Length: 454
Image 1 (cartoon, rainbow, N blue to C red):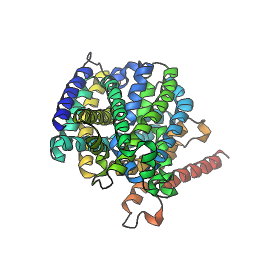
Image 2 (tube, one colour):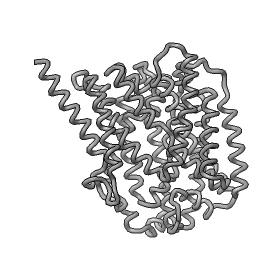
Image 3 (cartoon, rainbow, N blue to C red):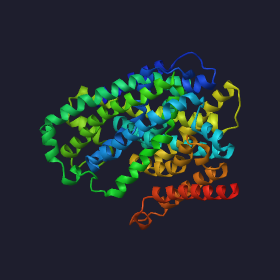
Image 4 (cartoon, one colour):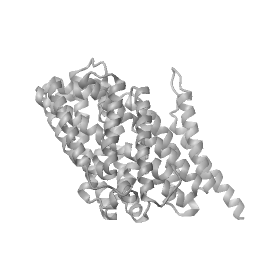
């Protein structure tokens, strides 16, 4: 199976390079947003695949905590995405902006733009996805984690750098087909071994059948707050900015939600089957590959391995390009030269790949990366970015917007660092006090502004 999978992955790598090839980009909007010409099928393909790069983390969570995976990683994200589709998507496409920091610049000024750009860069560094790709490579080849991380980061940066966002979109169409085909094969095969859906349900431990997975309401609630990251999700914004029309942007998000619900049924079902059939699995991050090796014949298990590679890489390449685009367009001094944007973004790819590699070698759990980064960055960005879309009287002032982002991030980081063996201080998740700081800054800012108006 490993030899077959390795051959398929090598063929896939060649096909990806061929798809990434295209006419040379002049930089600017062409390189960053594919010329703002995404059709509905291309929009849906690139948005759906970008959402699921954390597939091994989903398997890990389902193996550990059961059906609460859907409560945590499914339902809140559907609601947030639909809110994004009907409230934000059309107006964002009509704005003419290129990135979230562009919106912050127009609403709050240069300091807020730079602070927001730093937060977006941190959020889009693909640490969790590179960690999962390296895990797959290590299992397939026997390479050391260092070698697997280096190869995964280098290859992704190589093909993304060829045509920029256009390379991402082209390869996402291939990756979409592979990811759905792989899980559509695995789940029925697993259900044969569990006695169908009824047998799977009855075989699960009691806590795996509970809505919270035995974690408690506060832990679940914090994931609902993290799901609000959708409202400041750079991948959503980039694709909406790149859509051909506002209608394509709105309709594309709605169609994507329906496709996510289908894929969640397959992926969570497979995670639950892995818990039943492999109850003593040493590393839950490998739940899906281990399940495939158990229930599929070698050639189908090899194909499923390829599907996992495609699923992970679909998000790895998207986030790698997003972080590079943030470095090239938002963190550096602005310039009107498309060639300069192209050059800076490609250097940003190198920097992002190096930093993501360091993070992938530092962390061992994708879920931990999502939780920590999501808690810090979502707390910092959520209210200031949402405020961009509100009437000016309800926004932060420019100084307060910057203070809210820095203060919320600092509190969340401090809360995470202060966690000991007994958990977070006072048993409170870091996102709650961090969001409290953001709200407090807004309240004080409103009171101060009202006082000055009088």
